[in-house]
Every structure is written in C-alpha cells, then in structure tokens.
Picture 1 (tube, rainbow, N blue to C red):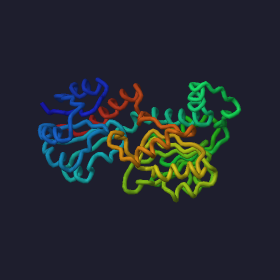
Picture 2 (cartoon, one colour; picture 1 turned 135 degrees about the horizontal axis):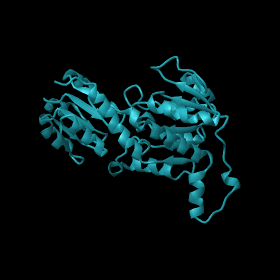
Picture 3 (cartoon, rainbow, N blue to C red; picture 1 turned 90 degrees about the horizontal axis):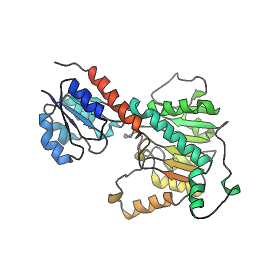
Picture 4 (cartoon, helix red, strand yellow; picture 1 turned 45 degrees about the vertical axis):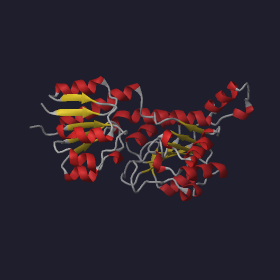
Length: 311
C-alpha cells in the first residue's frame, strides 16, 4: 500500500480522503527537517504547510516520492527545480483559503479606517476619545490590488458592495477589466490608490517589492495591506514610510521573519516600532487560517490528487 505523510495540521477529512483512495497515511505534525529526510524514502506522497522547507536534500532522499501537496499557496518552501528534475508533481491549494484571506484583509482595512482596534486599546487605558477617532468610509475610495490571483480576486469580490473602484495590477494576467475592477499598472496604483493591498508570491522577482522606491512613488498617502508573504515588503522601508507620512496606516498579517524566538536586536526593534503605532495592525499569519479554510484546503488537494495518473 503506497504511503503518504502529512507534516502539518490538517482537517481529518484529508486523512480520510487519502485512505479512501488507497493510501496508508502517517500524520507527523512535529517532524523535524532531519527526521523527514530520514523517513521520506518510504513515501509516495507528502503533504506540507509552511513549517519545513522541502529542499534539495529532502528531495534527493525521496526516491519513491511522486507528489507533494501544499496546504496553502506559497510554493517557495519547495525546491521546484529539483522536484521537476525528479518528476515529482507539486500541487498547491490557494483556492482553499482565498476567501479567508480576502475577509481578513477587508477586516484589517475597516478597522484601520474606523480606528476600531486603536480606540479599543484607548478605552482599556480609560480614555473615551470620540473626535480623535473620527473615521473614514471605504465607499468612493480607489483600492489598488497588486496581484490578482486567488486572494487578490477574493478581496476584489468582497469590495464590490462598497462602491469602490479597484485598480488591479498583475504582470501575468490581462483582459480582466469589468464592473468595479479596472486592469491597471503599478504606476497608476501608486498615483491614484487610497488603499493598496499586496497579493504576491515570494520569489526573486517579488522580494522587497515594496521598498524605499515603491513607497517614495506613492502620491495619495494610502492605507497599506499585506497578507501575502512578509518578504514582499521591506520592513525598514515601511517603517520609514510611516515615519514620513507616505502611508496613512498599515495592516500586516505576515512578517519577513515570523520566528520571533530567532529575532536579532534590530528585528525586535522594528517589530516593536510597528506594534507601538496606533495606525498599524499586525496579526500572526492567520489571514488564511479559518476553520472553514481548513476543510477547503483539504478538499482542494484531494480534488487535484484525483487528476493525477495512478498505476
């Protein structure tokens, strides 16, 4: 019986679905990189999230491996070139948690526009401040979405009832203008957007996409959101943009380094600078982490697995 290893927390329907398809399933959520390298030769399939990088060393040891399923969208944790060289099929499931990411981005944005989190914190300190917390309505604003994949599209869909204009910028898609969504360019987003939301994968092309040059080119002091990958944004450049008033506020669900225990003094200082600001919301990479998405991620991978040829 072919074996599959699940290395991350997954909904029980994933294991049940794999067993129904004839696999022996081992769930090892706490497995280390070294342990995975030692055990992987026995497995035909591997289910991963973002905790363990599936690098060349693991893949070279995985002589029986035929496929890898990624719970989520970020494929940067897998050495795709090596996987391709070994004819290992790699599947992701961005359709499984895109609705959750879209809702989270909208929630951060509305909280920032209406000072919801910051005024709650003031009340905890015994301050009742109405005029200082007068908010802004989303209606009538221009929202720039950089990356119109699954999550960018989900946010654009949720924005429809608010009466906004969406300027969508995607290097690899064209011909998608319609309704409130306008196919646009980065320059137009920087020129006209009241809100900018990032929905990009992390790769050599997008590393520090939001850098000093990006922020210095903004014209309207927008609200800035990132729930894609932390490395897409240069944290120091964002802090500088906040200091200079180039952005009005920021909502971040991801950071460049999400292992707080490994932080250098500089990284700790930058995080504290963000957390001290009333116009910044930081959440611990939970945008795509809803109870519903846990089910949908599993279902997505099972559907894609059914498309693979079986002996």
